[in-house]
Image (cartoon, rainbow, N blue to C red; front, side, top):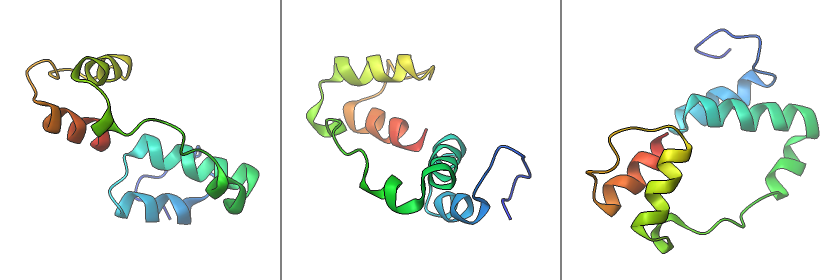
Length: 88
């Protein structure tokens, strides 16, 4: 059972495991719902084409934070901004 009861979670077992691993609620819900819809194996084969945060410029990272609607990122150093983005 998910720690937060919601009808939007289609695979509660996977959701809980992802949250325990430290993923955000949004990311855990997105992955668990995709796994329920398409199957866990299909979801596991997808993705992986985005540039690593470490390889991006500070300007690109700030733009990503802006796109996600985060705040307080302009004063952060690159490593701190990467941590903020990963924890979102």
